[in-house]
Picture 1 (spheres, rainbow, N blue to C red):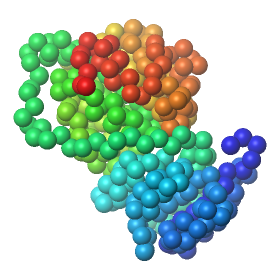
Picture 2 (cartoon, one colour):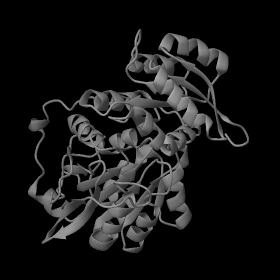
Picture 3 (cartoon, rainbow, N blue to C red):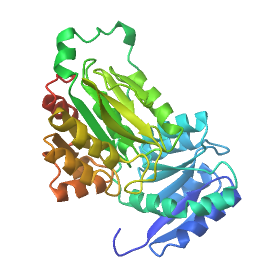
Length: 356
């Protein structure tokens, strides 16, 4: 997008919301809102005539809901889409479904005082739209629920012994919901304990963890302070809280805590990786996936220097290559791999078999 303005089409049934988004985006010299639409039918015509680079799309609209429109759009004219979502249980589910369908990112509408709340989110909205403009639009198969998960054989004593002291730490941001799902879906029931930080707001991480738990052979849950890091389990850092690994006797656990943002984020991947460098050392495997910015780069270098095996997702398979690029530039990556190979390599580094 270098050298020209990013063209944006704003689609929202609320006249106030359209006005607010247009005002925010047009204030940036690198962005031009080329049009607005109050419903998907009007949006369809304007996409053809205005040829926008990015679409902002409300989830709940008349005539055709945002998900239906997004699915049709990604099938007919794939393009970067940033969703606008409400912070409700239904809103969280719908937004995660939108990301599965191909949306690049989402913006959570303020609960109260919409006008001032949107203005306060101005920098975030601009950053997400700019990031979306350079994103690679990739589809992946929708993961299906694991049938009769309780019937899966529990980890054997031997596998517990071999993997109890191995921990896989995964960090991600833009494009990361699907990238993390791709990795965790390949983990077997006795995979090493896994901890995950992904840049998502409070409320979304619980729903996200529950969705992963239904589609993965390992157990997945939103982390709570003091949770043990166990084989066959993945802990997702809760939105708006940091999470770090700690030593708990002969095993590992997580500490979930509130503190100022680190590397501009809360939860921060750097916080998790730095704890991995301190407490996991050679027992850790660090994985940095797609995302904008540089959160996690320095922390991953710390893990590598502490003896951990570290993996970065390659540019070709990243939605946004920002975070992995920064880590690679620092020399923090033991390996740079396409997304589809990362699970196998992480498990191999932890001496565990991958699902095929």
